[in-house]
Image (cartoon, rainbow, N blue to C red; front, side, top):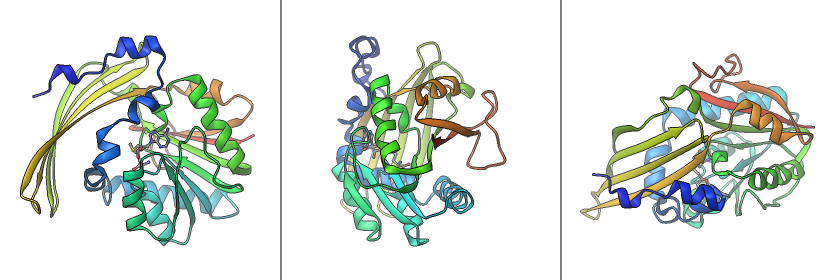
Length: 274
Ligand SMILES: C[S@@+](CC[C@H](N)C(=O)[O-])C[C@H]1O[C@@H](n2cnc3c(N)ncnc32)[C@H](O)[C@@H]1O
């Protein structure tokens, strides 16, 4: 099913020090098929849990309601938060993803921008970057540029929430699984081939989507690859240095659950502007 030719040449990419954020810029999934992302991601339990967590966090720890959604994609979090009267700004470098975000949500201010070089205003109470997206920032330069932009955008003592899956809990070997999704218009079968290399701190994946568009009576496939850098708590602590302090590391979207490498499902870093 999976054509090995589509597999990225990891060694070459690592050697060349190309940022994974630049590799993902060409992803067909984000740049030309955002409808599929919308079907697979929005409206699910994760979105609900994440939004509930974000809104209770900001109510408890922030004085205002000005929120920045970094790499917002189709805006699945911003659209719910803006409907709950949060003042939302979202940025993403995919025009196609933002088109859907704007179509679904007229309240959030959406900007086409790279999270490593944005400037969309100041005095945000908090910013968040969810769904393992900061893991595309694979170089120290990427991560530092990103942190500098967020630092400029936040109020004094403002928060940055970074969230990823807990790579350390997964089996560090080849994985193959299949998932099916159905909605009114699309029937989607997704095949994932994934390698987690804890020594190199890299996850690389191939996704093969078989998609039936019932409206257009058409079936097509989409193949995507993705590289992610696996960040440990120690590494994040080193990278944030004097710009941010580590407020909490949670194991899920829940302030009561502290992160533990062997057990937690997610890694939720809560950083506070120093
Ligand atoms: C996995 S999706 C997550 C989207 C959203 N945060 C969510 O949870 O649904 C990754 C998103 O990050 C965007 N992205 C990746 N690298 C980016 C960068 N350097 N600057 C801006 N957006 C970026 C992609 O275009 C895509 O919309």
